[in-house]
Image (tube, rainbow, N blue to C red):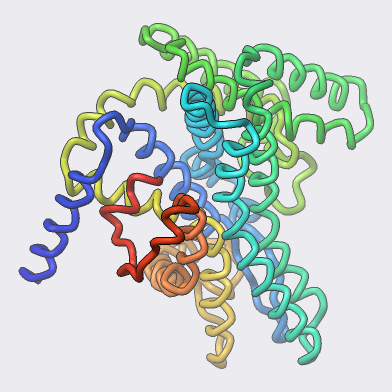
Length: 400
């Protein structure tokens, strides 16, 4: 244990020393928080129940609606888009100052997103095909593949907004917010077609993205604006849930008539505004905390593998669930119906097992994300290239 602590201290010190002085560590901490919130949220509100050897998807929120406040803690996508808009706007401005073309800048940023995705799609294409050939029920395969692919939708939206940064960075958040409100009024107030709601997939996440871009330009230099954002978001969310007929859960619930997330509703966007206001307010305390090498090292390491963690966390949970089927009885918190406090207690005990499975996935597939982060060498560098040892985290941190 003493040796482990010594090595960790050395690694943390190296990461701290390798971090550029102008790096906004608080923003990285917010990104790490958003990713881990999504991961823990999925592990807590997604359940695979076993019946006659087949698996089907359900949620404790469907059986215990009083758990809705849990979704308020772990639905952190607005923070992710806030940080994304902030980083994209700053990055594009920096690229222009360095004379980097839009195509080169966009290629670098989108490459970091999509290269790790390819590994997930290839593996699950093989697994799904093998399961069907092996006689697995189609509904089981569909449930598993849906769990893997459904979180990827937001990456497509995020990539589109990132690519459009030069166009959307100067848009005020009130414009997409007005679109979300208009769509919901048409949808729910005038019984418009359901498909119109999907307009909010772009408009809804454009709200925090443009807030992040405004943040990069100093829009929240005064705390009063962030406090106003937080207060208005909380009041609007409460009013929409209590009197507007919107569901209390901020994630989708199987069987529910309306989902706040698929597509995003005005309630989800208002809730996101409150989250964004809170994120801006905690920036300074986070910045102070991130001055400690060990605290910063943890955040930096999460950011180095953020995409790997996000892309494989559902696979880790499903792998544990599938292996549990080898036991003759249904395992509480893993295969049983999530309809009691006992299930919650059992599921909490499974979280370290999911994390262990995720660490195996991380060790196997992080190379795809790290390769996407490394800058391409120039032609002269390639000509004079010599074998180099594997890049260590302390050096990789400069490319987070």
